[in-house]
Length: 114
Image 1 (tube, helix red, strand yellow):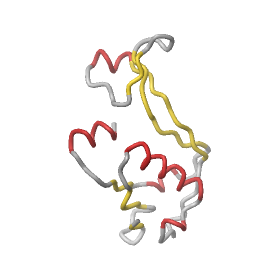
Image 2 (cartoon, one colour):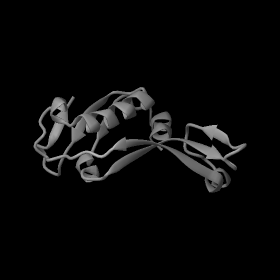
Image 3 (cartoon, helix red, strand yellow):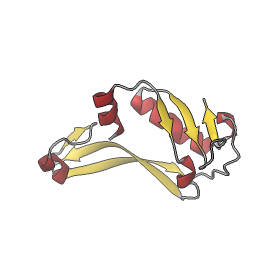
Image 4 (tube, helix red, strand yellow):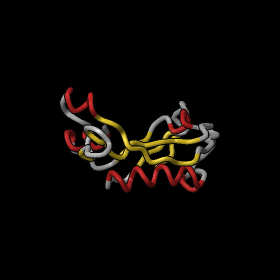
């Protein structure tokens, strides 16, 4: 969905909010593509299916990452755990778009500018 949003809206930087909501999960997944149709002969697409027909037949393909912990006290990108950084770097690589802001909690001061 993020790729589709980028394509429609033309943004050039990302703000990742609510990273703290993912804190404590054993695994974190990110959808990287979809198979439309059955898995054996299904067409692989990188964008969210536009039609209801395509969406009904879409099966997501996920990249899986180790879970991570966010304390809310992180002030710099380097304060994030290696696993959290790996997840964020995957998003940047897949989107070909830099992440400039990361929120690690609900307060204004819980924002990392990258």
